[in-house]
Image 1 (cartoon, each protein chain N blue to C red):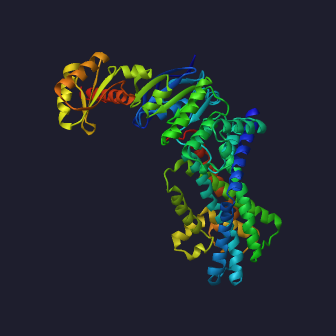
Image 2: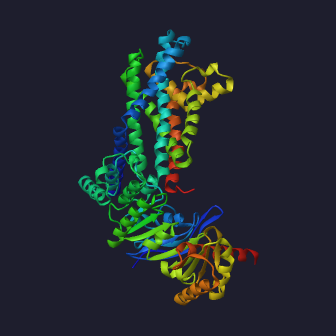
Length: 320
Length: 266
């Protein structure tokens, strides 16, 4: 069953089209990454799916309910973690969770018990009585996440949950998300960090300018960039053009050069043969090399590749 | 029926939230309550010596005159607290969390209203007690005095809806300062501290038609405290206008706020 669907979803703000017809299908129990730069339309999509905003056109369902016609049913089945830690700063962590529990219509006793359980689960038990304003960024995020999970909703929306967090806090949030998914929750995660979808998501949808420009598993998206890559770091910058020419001869492709890091990189199809040929050619030419690596492309490279293609095709449309 | 029950329960939960805020920040509450008392002492003892009020005798007369005005002014300044609370929730994403939850959408404003009105009752009590301590009295019986307090709370209720609307609409840091700067002239361009008849003609007319002036005039009349009088229609019908103005403001800002809350995205 699909936990989240969107069909030809559009949203217009004045003359700006934030969503220009988005289709989405997220199977229940999976983690779906929504990747895109600032202003791509990620948050607009999340706001429509969480009933905070109406679509200009198109339809969407969450947990089987239509977001426009049955917003109350949708709200009873979702948790939302927005870009800010949406908790009361003056109250303590426990008071926050009890308040939200009461608003989810748990009884007084049940709300208190649930608050205690969540505080313990998210490692906040000993700070539960302190005002949230004294919490670290990571603690606030975890409290925010806990507040979204009071009723153990089947669908959870995470809108850039780790933006502005230090690496350690980011790791804590990731662990929390993994634990949820193990429990069967469907997660829609928006992010600007490719590493995040790489680590967490089963499927990725890349959007830019309100349009889906690619969709697939993280590894399939990486495959779109032409498989593995060889990077060569030369000892002396003057050898960079010669090394690039050498790699071009071996692979038949134009390498990318990075003068700041004295690095030349290129995509390869037959990985081991290309690596052997490169090492041999470098040894024959007498170029001093600091490093030769064979690696999978990062999602950053995939993303830059995809968005560059997208803006090129836009430009072509305009000039045509 | 069930829906109505949850609307009450959710409103009570959010009222409780504000009471918890007071319990966690007692110093701020005390400062908030003492601010109007300070205004009374400042105007009553620093400036009051030079003021004479028709129907009042000297500085003591000015202080009697001052209390109803400060009570009403406190109700208007309450707008800042409402505005700040609503705006903080919007900018922190707490409002979005509420809107994405299966709770009664009226709860946010019900909770806000009840908490702010409770705060207003406490403010009025503290200020009235301070007034009694420096010689202010009501002279027309308890029923009239209670009616005056009722009109003061009605004004606070109208300010509440303006505060909610501004809190939902205004964005950016420094917004509180902007609201404070707007509230002060609204408070002083009135009959609270000086007679509109002593102001330049057109300015005096605005001051007389200021909703605050109607409540102040009505409270002075009902308490039996000295006032400026005034021949204009609006000054002659202060009690009527102390009802009409707030009702009018609520009729404008209540639907505006509801529409804004339902669709917060610009």
